[in-house]
Image (cartoon, rainbow, N blue to C red; front, top):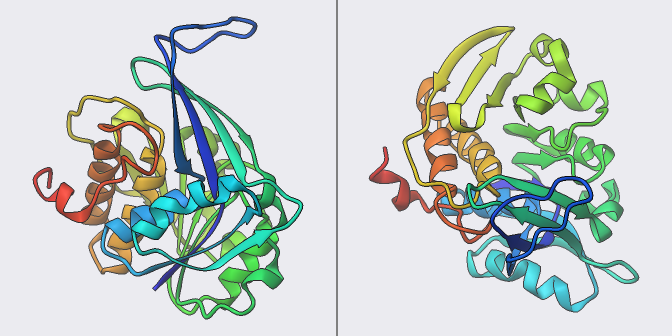
Length: 278
């Protein structure tokens, strides 16, 4: 089983003709609400790709919590590690999406900020995935408990304890995050995956590129959730024992397919959805 330690949000999405510049108002957008949060997205993505998954996270004791957890429950993700916290709001992401699928995101983390190491102490953890929308201390506590594969998505970019980085078997970042961490990533004894948007992704080990994959041509409706799908697919593939080349190709295809539908969690592909592309 994979235990995902990460954020749970409700995404409020405005899709319009273009993204606003600083100080600009853009009208004509359409509004939608979807469950989200990088932790929840990655948990559901891994589940839809065939893994047994448990999510460890926190939501508020409010009416948004049920909406944020709805697709996870429907997708049979184990929610026994989710805390309902009095006095906190469920996390919210305010997302603007342009006609060509680009996005801007502002996150109000709410209850995600109060997930602590003590909240995961009761969990038996085999494989573990973590994202930096919860505290690094909580991720480190989970990584120490893990008996199998440890995957870290270093997003959003921030300072991370060396001990947490050293515990990872796989670290995934995008180009911006890779630039933030610099050469420190390539000094680690871990797979380093760098997603390159429409150009695909590369996989590194010991400072050397070991695999590169390009995505299939798709019509992009919404890129929200594509990075989370990529990370989960790569983790699942490596746990399943696929070669680095096969695993990276699988992940890049999964991320591309996630761009063909609107919303983060509604767009996450199922394993059968990928067969035609693969």
